[in-house]
Image (cartoon, rainbow, N blue to C red; front, top):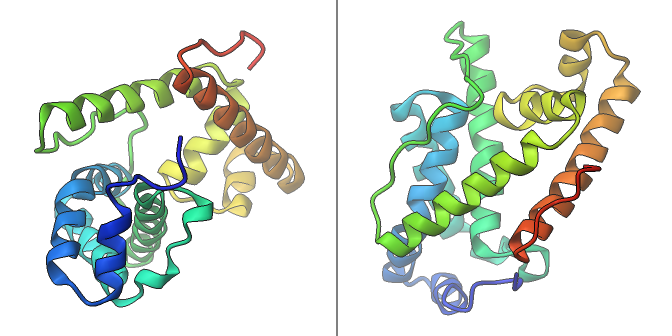
Length: 194
């Protein structure tokens, strides 16, 4: 996988120069996937749409924060979205509007062309397969952290595991997830020793 989708590079350059049409094109290209993630985390379409707008507003205000060496534009957008969605989820919990997220819930259908929808579906399937191959304790820790927005300390309290154990499970799970995803992306199957 390249560090940046070549078709995103000119858009990001134009956004940095204040071109709102470029922001619109980036939004059209990636908003469905960002919205799918925020909806999955928040379980509330209206809240998810608010976070989606916040993410693209942040891109407009600070496009220079994107670092191609750290991943693709889509990855950057998804990281921003995940962070904002978890912040929103925590705020909702504090206000007593907790929305429990069901792991494995269907993703919100996203409009777009068939090729993009197919790629999104294949990538989601890959992530599900790799997650399913992880040891149960690592998979649960990842689900709690990344889909339900719990901190490491909260995961330790929920699972009864020591904080150091939770950190180790998350780190090992992420490494196995990365390796498994890379294996799938290269056309192979992850080893049974995930």
